[in-house]
Length: 119
Length: 224
Image (cartoon, rainbow over all chains, first blue to last red; front, side, top):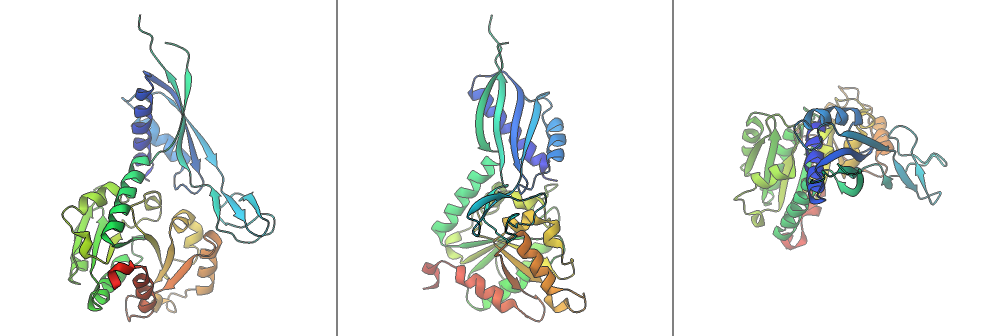
């Protein structure tokens, strides 16, 4: 359960980015989480809600885009999506291949920001 | 309040850890020390393998040291220090993994230049340490014969983040009814092409291959 550590890092990064962009509120946060990132989306969602209290992200919506594993199959010379699970086998030719092209992401993709207008 | 606007960020959430890890990796390179991060479930035999490795490597004239992470106690550091090698305990409190920042702090005052190999024994945990780069040159995942052949299938992420798998307690393989072929197959399923070393910290069975593997990694400038 390191999702709380991840949520704290996410909040720190999002606040810094939002402040730098001159925003006063963050309406929503979009993150990309790969199947091999080691992060469980439900646990991150839960940790985010708890950790965001009292920050710029309190009440903000966390949207998690889950990315499946994609490998490059040297036999087919093509990138393939691995069907659900973690067995790194090409779904077309059935060969095992460890050349991972997607699935390790743990990234803050974008923020929806609001800026309070001064009277 | 004005209309909402979208700010594209596209940055790693663990960016801060990754940056610190990059800094550490550069420091290790400049010092000419090879750094190994040992990860496994609790009780897989990290400390026993390390204890033996430190002892034998020291006898062979290598300069080795270790950092060891646990939630609490200095027991492992005491065990490892018996080898005569410099050892520091990192007590993480409630944190279930080591982070680059903890490594940086634990290394304060150490002259890395005098070392050939530095081991980092991570907190026993097959989940969380996968996400945290410590600036190491090699990540070894340990897998003991008493754990069940399907461990790699259950914890694919850590196997995928590691460079090499080390089977431990091989001296118990027969007693435990360990199916070696199945275990190796399972490793290859989640990490095709992964190097696997078979070891036992007791009886020195297979320790030679593990140590020879490590010795090959030491920067050439140090071995001359």
